[in-house]
Amino acid sequence: MKSTMRVGLIGAGRIGRVHAENLVYRVPEANLVAISDVYVEAAEEVAAQFGIPASHKDYRRILDDESIDAVLICSSTDTHAQFIEEAAQMGKQIYCEKPIAHDLADIDRALAAVDKAGVKLMVGFNRRFDPNFARVREVVAAGEIGEPHILRIISRDPAPPPIEYIKVSGGIFLDMTIHDFDMARFLVGAEVEAVYASGGVMVDPAIGEAGDIDTALITLHFENGALGSIDNSRQAAYGYDQRVEVFGSKGAVSADNNYPNTAVISDAGRVHRDLPLNFFMERYTQSYVNEIKAFVECVVNDTPPPVTGLDGRIPVVMGLASAKSLAERRLVRLDEVA
Image 1 (cartoon, rainbow, N blue to C red):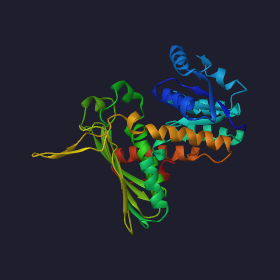
Image 2 (cartoon, rainbow, N blue to C red):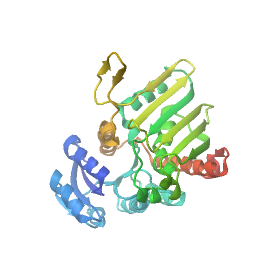
Image 3 (tube, rainbow, N blue to C red):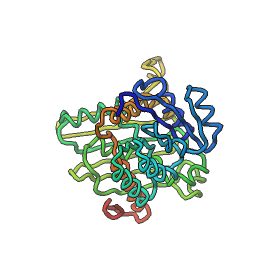
């Protein structure tokens, strides 16, 4: 692979725009040469904004371009597996946003196509690349807190997504908690063997009417004996709440929320500070940069992707097991759905 790789971007939505900006301004080893979107006006707008030479309605224009080395798949979830298969068949190196698919058979076909073609696939679990969470993993991996015993993940959104999105999201476990499932494996450095999920509708009755829940607590049982908990809410009154802690035999390590500043105000009535950053694009700005740099580096240097296709599959298995646990009110082993 040449030292500068040519990239095509499929999907000009919110996350596609973030990756376009980062590729153009912050990743000199990549040259973003084309973007496509089913709404071609969106692709044209992003192309004009960031100086991308080509914009298309049909993603196949990117896949058919032999000069393009790699593709970023940032389209809707229902297209991911198909686009991965087609990109692999065309010999492209692939980055794909999570999830690969909601159906394991679709995921397995996509991963088989990647293996057959001998190309790289990196799945977009950006939180691994957040400096705070990466430091937590570094501490755990170095053995500084001994053997991990308990993991706690608090993950609460400032507001629920639109009901129309809820209806096609795959449910809270495959849409929201999927990030936390990946973080659990990443932070502890071990696989989860069973889950027990509880949940309800406490934020908006319309979410329940759409067939989903908005509040969940998932207990994780790891193969190494560690235990974990994930606490989810679609709406935290005080903003975006993203905290983790790993407790071990020799100590503990935790990461707090990110704030717009470090000022703490003390007066006669209270000690307080500003609310946490309220939008995931602000909270995880640096993680998106680090993530795309990591993808480009693994292609240019011909090293394994830091988040593999298998890493993309396992959180979906955890999500499906959690949904089964919620429905059946019991502990569910991952091998029941895997």
